[in-house]
Image (cartoon, rainbow, N blue to C red; front, side, top):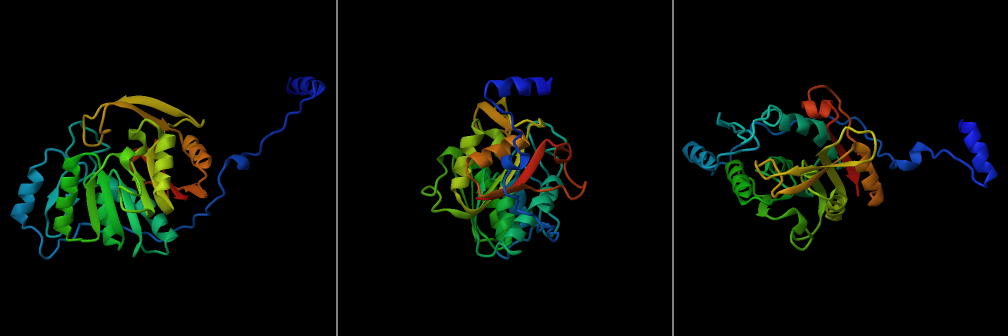
Length: 292
């Protein structure tokens, strides 16, 4: 049948050629196996930070926390969500994610973030911002919810870091003007699937980076380059900040959009072991290191 179709088309002046798969992929970054790096955990406490009593009182002011926090000296606080979720409520989840993708980011910068300017998009209570600050970066984190920025500033005060700042900002208002310039590294960790237009979101995110974008997102399991749409309500601190359509691209959809936007190189960060959350192991979430 294929030969008959090919002969018929040839008779009409057409030929069929297979497009090599590599022509649809990015030039590889050739990620090498990086040294293991673990988060700074439990978090240190600054010499002039709040007392145990003050910390307990401040944490109790907020009904919901997306991250569990542990501090030197034994103070620890659990995750609290309005919607029960075994996956989201696992306190090991951010520590596993850190060990998964942060070693590749540090490797790309010679093993250190010292002197790098880092943007943490939708920073929530500042877990990733604080970790990058402890690694020596100058960090700016923003989130659309004021109460999350209050939480981030509380964690900052406890840890005693000065090389991180937080501000209230809507994703679509992100710009070099609103954030005092561009950044060496942009973190987009769990943001893309809370937005309605992933192509425009990636374009805006990439525009903020001088060197690298670390992208981590939930994805559709489809092997085709597609985007699935869902409706999301702002019912939890881990939800979108407003009601509306949100988009889940597939892995190949993410890479097709990166190609369309002219990213220099990108590569999916591999799973090196099974000590990972179930959504990563089940191909429902993935991470990329993107050279802009």
